[in-house]
Every structure is written in C-alpha cells, then in structure tokens.
Image (tube, rainbow, N blue to C red; front, side):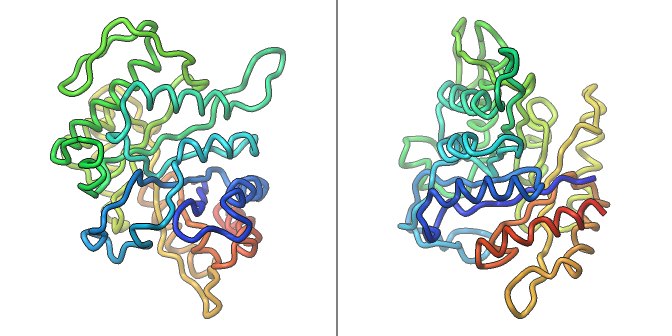
Length: 308
C-alpha cells in the first residue's frame, strides 16, 4: 500500500493566522492518518521566474519562502508520528557540513518521546535536487553549471558525516579528513530522495547514495513505470534490494465546480501511479480544497481511499 504525503504551504500568501498556522496544520494532518508532510525550498529568488520550465511560476519573486529545515524543526515539536520531508531542498546551496549537522539535528528532534532513556528513530525524509534558478547559485558564489557535481558531493559528504566517526571524504568540490560531526541522525540510515530526470549521473546518485526517486514535474505514468524498471535493475546490479526503493507519484487531481477534490474521480489516477511503481502519493493541501480547514477535513477520506 502506498503512503500518503500532504504538501503544506510555506511560500506565497501567508495563511490566515500567520505562518504559525502551518505548524498547526501539520498537527492536524498527522491526526488524519496521513503518512508524511512535505515542504519545498528556495533560498533566494531572482527576477527571471519566466525561465521556470514547468508553466507559470506560482508566486512573484518577492513572495515569502520559509526555510524548510527550520520549519520542519518547529513541526517536529508539534507532531509525534508523521514523517517530515523536503520536496525538494536545493542541497548544493548548503555547505555540506552545515547541512549534515542541521538535518541530523532535525532527525534527533523528530524522534518522539524518550522511553527508558532511549529515543525512538527519527522521521526525516530528505528530498534533494539541484533547483532550476541560476540566480540562487550566483548569490552564493556558486557555479550554476556545476550544480550536478555539487549535489553529488554534498550528499556524499553528508553520508560520510552521518556514518563515520571521525569522517573523511574527498570529492571534486568537498574534501575533509578526520572531522567529527555529532549528533548522528536518529535513523540508522536517513532516507535521501533524489529528484529529477534519470540520466546516468542521477541514476548513479540514487544507486550509491539514495533511497528514493522524485520524478521531475510533468512525469506521466509511463515515465514513472520506465524509471522504476531502470532503477530496480541498477539497484540489483549494485547488490541493493530494489524493493527498498521509494518512488513519489503526484497524481492529476480532479476537482469539482467548488474547487474541492473529487476523490472518486481522482483515485483512478492514483491507482495508475501505484501500479507503475509509485510507493508514495503526494498531494498538495491546496489541491484538496482552497480553504485549508476544509482541505484537512477531507484528508481522512483520501487515507481511506488509498487504503482500499
């Protein structure tokens, strides 16, 4: 059975009640039985949002955009069970050691209540990608044309810092030797989901460093089915279990005249994605209903429909 992820609004128009409302929403979504919440990322914005390749960019350049790890830390304190995901965090914009520390801290904070001095495992799913906007890289003195290498090296360095004590790592853009980064994540292996097209380098990232795939926006059922087949073969060839691969699917949501989701009409799109190999169904809360309280009230029906 696929899991259900609900995307929360952390950019654009501030929700009624302020940005703290998103933390409250997360707790409400957890209570519906949904499995994960996800929030997205931009560090800074340039004026050239017209260069966005997937249609009209949803907000103007001067719209607020909350930082995901900071936001998820607040949500971790208000929830106990629901998994906390980024979809995506632009990892190359963060120094590797700082990203490793921030995410490990979030994973520890999300681990639930201590019982007999043992903290349960963390809840972080780190979805990462390169982003699309040159200005974000320019603003930090980074080479946009090197963003793929930066992504590989940053996550490779994070894996070393999370797994080794002390840690040593060498790559074209990140190198260190015999350094200590504590605490480690609460999870024995913190899941990393790579986004994007499955060119050779991205397949290699997923096979060596990843646990999940977030298909590029606009991917259809056939794209996902073909991609899952390729990744399963790559994982098997590398000695990893293909059954452990997580794959996100974002269904076309059918809405009625009232702009609310029509669950019965949407479910065939969901089932097609699951049949193609999607293990997680990602739906933005505003696609369920433009009124946030109403959207939350409809999530239990989505949970039930997905279970059946």
